[in-house]
Length: 309
Length: 173
Image (cartoon, rainbow over all chains, first blue to last red; front, side, top):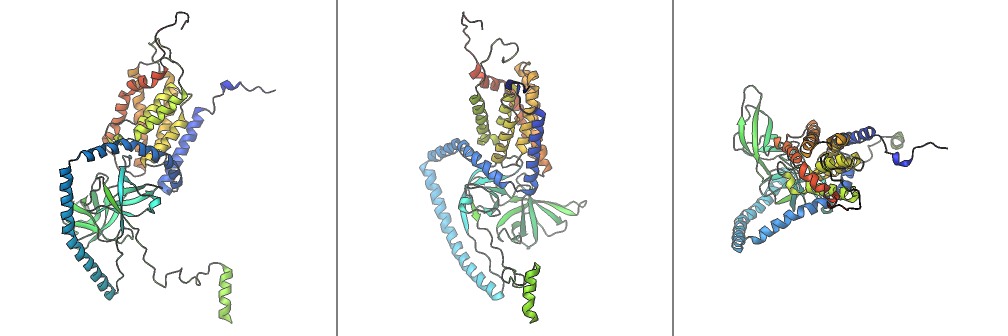
């Protein structure tokens, strides 16, 4: 004999218990995602649902943009074509010279015994949309795991550094712009070679932090990547110094910069190939000589025996 | 359930597929590029609160959690940020549903406004705690627009449940 209530009174778990479970799960997800970043697999699985939906939602806008382009008059297109051809001619002379300079530079570096600079190889990608999150500055581009994009690749446009790939999905990837509050780029002032790190401010500008108030920095100075981070290649324009506030109450100057690239614009960007790691010197390279790595006792014993004989 | 306590119309029972369809439509509205404009409300939160007030037995925290996770991934925000906000909002909405429905629509909107603000403020708090940038005050315009939209939304989402007005003489109701 069971005295259970008839099934139409069943209401499942108590709401408060459910609330506790869901809130605890959400907070656990938040902490793990913010601190450990091990949830990329979960994110990719959910993205398999959301990305098609986002693509569909973006279609009307893309169709409107397409209509706008088609309505653009032929004269305007011809003008643009003419301008582009002229620009290409003007730049080709410079390009030829640059190629010659690169060869010369490589030869001189070899003579000096300095390691060669890594060549630049880049691929174009299209900006699909900005990420909806109002708290960060990110864009979505149309190249992903399928095109062998890896997290950490620098992203440029024709004027300078735009950002860095931070998450890779199968068909798209997410680029954190240099104006994001979490993004830092090691830079160098072109005029005097002073090295520093530039941080995003979150409002479209950048800040050069922890520069002493008497540092040799002037308004209008160009900042380029210094390349000492091992991620960005050296020499790409990042920002221009806009304003310097030197307050004697603080030991550091407050230096704001504007990005050189059209960071918040839509259009085409270039993905630079990930920078090759520099090989370790022979005495530090463990992979080349596996013998000295004797961690467990047996291998050590085996190695010592031939020496004793 | 009646649209308001003053109305004499009796509604048909809600169709489950319509609830699901409206929630998915709200998600799609959120994914449109228009959601970057200032003052565009969080459609998914608004629709979730609507159904958890109207049909608290059908749409509850489970839906809030699932939609929240989808929004998190679509938004490229922290995983669990929307989920936490939506779960709390649906819980409060469904526990207040018996009270809210006795008010006229304008006053219902005043009940919904704090819920929508809660959704935004929870996300704001979570992101500030994890060190994100301040998004600007227009981040908080959306909930006010959402509360104003409560009235048209109620009519739009209850439309399939309205019965024809002409009465059958042989039927009591």
